[in-house]
Image (cartoon, protein in one colour):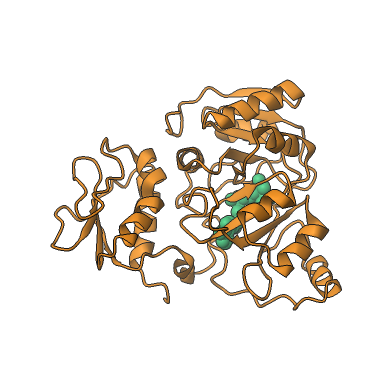
Length: 335
Ligand code: TXA
Ligand code: MG
């Protein structure tokens, strides 16, 4: 897969067992599949492949690496990836499969790519109810990262025609399952702490969530922090910077020569320097750099240097998102 935004020949198939088998094969090959869910069509890729996830961001022209929801087949699969709190169990039992996304702390052995969660330690998980989505997830056998299947800043798609209009040439296969029932995205609830917090209202209402928690004898919903939702399509507040991954070390951008003691992450012909000698993409490929970004920041941080430098990254295409995330990582967390 090239990872470029616009050079795919798009197949469109009506939902059938062979079509779902073909879609699972595309995912296994690192490709992109648009598929119906009960809320909106998702633009799916293998959540464990940073390369596939980078291709999702490129296809959508998403201006920043907002964390993506990983879709899984069952509650059991979800809790193998994210740590189940009592709140998470109660909400999952009541609303999954369905339009509910839970934010959970990643399990220590969670194979989801760090790019999928934009470098955060918490991951978003959803078990969709749509039969075609469920069959696709079962056949693929792993988590599928999927934002809504629309170019960034456009309306979410509820028909295969909408996906075709927005993403033709940017997705390998569109599974046409007719119209989505709901058209409203899933409710996103952070269940990683002591109290559940709604980060995005959606298909499951606040009253339904509150009733479920009360019925299970759990603490009521916590207040929604103004900075909770790092969703660039609906920016919450500049405070959202604080929720993004920042390394322990200080980070400097646009570094062409490593100073003594600095771990320099290279790009293109600016070689990496320091203990780890990392390079985001020796060939200067922005999709490859995007796929490597969060892993290399983690690796550089693990080396223990006080300062991490990053070589200049072009600002076009995925470079805009890479520079955006680097800028956020230079910003202290407690802004
Ligand atoms: O109904 C839906 O949720 C659809 C279908 C395709 O499943 N998906 C969808 O994805 O709406 P997207 O990418 O458009 O929205 C994902 C939301 C964003 O608001 C994002 O900020 C939030 O989930 N999110 C994802 N991971 C997160 C995390 N680790 N922490 C906080 N918020 C997260
Ligand atoms: Mg969206």
